[in-house]
Image (cartoon, rainbow, N blue to C red; front, side, top):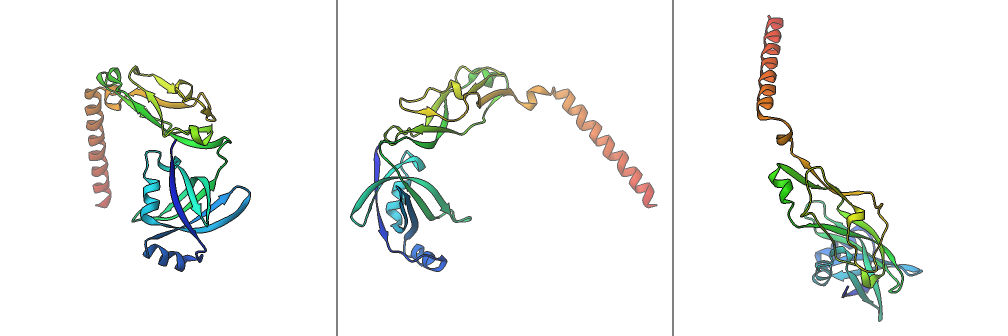
Length: 217
């Protein structure tokens, strides 16, 4: 995985009001920690930070940060956003060892088209969105694909069915379900039965209404 470069500025004043002023100036507060050193409170230029967060790797991007003349590799550990505007309000970076494996959550992406499921009034549902893996920074995949083209009704695919890139070790249980293919509710309940159930419900409401009216009198 390629690296993204980002410049951080140290010495920001902590607290709610200083952070608000910082964001008003087009800067974003953040923290860098790890590597056996004390956490550093920093700030980033928003356009540069936005570019670092918008690569194909998403939040799994490797970010090389320049800070006070030093350069080190990091990954994004937490992004805080405004609850309404969804603006980034704070970001945490974790220093990492380029040679050591780290735990990551990698997105699982379904590819292909389950035609047999579709023609039989079925529906494919993804149960697991992310795969927890142990991997060296250079081997972190942007995503892991799962081909669902051969799925049939009542099929299920599990973590053990995933084709993993070289160097990726799975932490998630191999038996955990990733995707299922089942009949839709409309396919399970015949149309005449649905109509009958609706009719019965209507009669019940009518009877209930009569009882209520009688009691009011």
